[in-house]
Amino acid sequence: MHRGRFSLKVFLSLQALALAVFSVAWAGLSPRAADRLQEAVSGRPAMPGVRPARNEPLEIEPLYNEESVVSDGELAAVLRLVRPKFDKEHIKPNFVEHALRAWGADARFADPAVMSGADMRDFLLDKSRYVGHYGREVRPLLVDRPRGVAIRWGDDDTASIHHDHLLASLTEAGVPLDQRVYPPSGRRMTMNDVLQEALRDFRLDERETEWSVLGFGLWLAPETTHWTTSDGRTVSFDLLARRLMRGWKEYGVCSGTHRVYSLMALWRLNERFNRRVLSEDVARETWAWLEEVRDAIRDSQFDDGRWPPNWPEGRRAKENPENAPEYQQVIATGHHLEWLAIAPVELHPPREQIERAADWVISTTTSKTEEEIVGYYTFYSHVGNALALWRGTRPAEFWTKWTSEHPETEAALPPPAADEPADGGNDALLPPPPKP
Image (cartoon, helix red, strand yellow):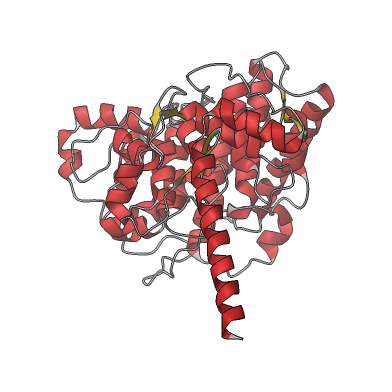
């Protein structure tokens, strides 16, 4: 009896060891060797990589420069609070990704306590920097795959919270495809290997596709509009757009607002490249869907300017407001201002509503301390980025110019809290931030 148990235990141990050895060997294969092995096992030819259209990602440029939405002084006050000045506890991939996509890979700061763009990029792409922070007991953020580099993601503070969020953040930050990447294996890899793995790994029925769509669009459009994933399915930007439009508008992270931003970006790319990214039918559907969003936020905005998380309900959201905490209203308001800054004026609610939304989110943000902001950093980073876009600039560009003219800003204290809380409540004790 004991011998049988022992034999089973030994057998299982040997199986586990064999699997571990195979995994290490598989991860160490060259891309071509991995292709040959995959072809031999599956009987099907390996899917070729997708040729990106460029080494530098595209940018979706802002369309406005409106002091009536945010003044220079207001923008500087907000950006000072959303600099990536993280203490050790808050240097998490999700926080760094949000800071990097807002500030960019070239951002520099006079304050040594603030992470530069290069620091943030390297924290995400160099396993030694990541291990130096978390230690070897935490699983790596970068995952070796035979033909590329994947990203560990999921509901874990040491991982990227959303699928392809790291890819989209690096892309919006302007990190080029030839940027070196240092995975655990030590192989010589680049940002292109991260992109190629994401393209192969994509599944149309994933719960979250917002960041995949954005990243793919900024790298591939307009030359590549169709490609094949590792499971043999052909994906196109038409399919991706329709996937984002599927279901109730509040579905998705941050009250559905990331879907709106990605669709707006796709529509802008389609127009930029003479309607070569989306088919005529899908472009028309996308515009109609965005018009519905415009009408919903026009009807759901509260009188003080904030938007509620249930904004897709339109007038009902205003007439029967949810008892939503302030951070959820910051999410909805900041994210809507962000996509509106890259949207044609035909998709805007009346301008006075945009100005009221900006007034509310500026007042709410500047009434906080740096310590309060950092716990909710992911949401407030969108506020800083949105307001910069409304001035036709980017946070790092504006901050560099502002601090050169106002050198005292880096050392100045943040704006004092108002005597009265901003409309909608300014909780003295903020609840723990959720996963954004």
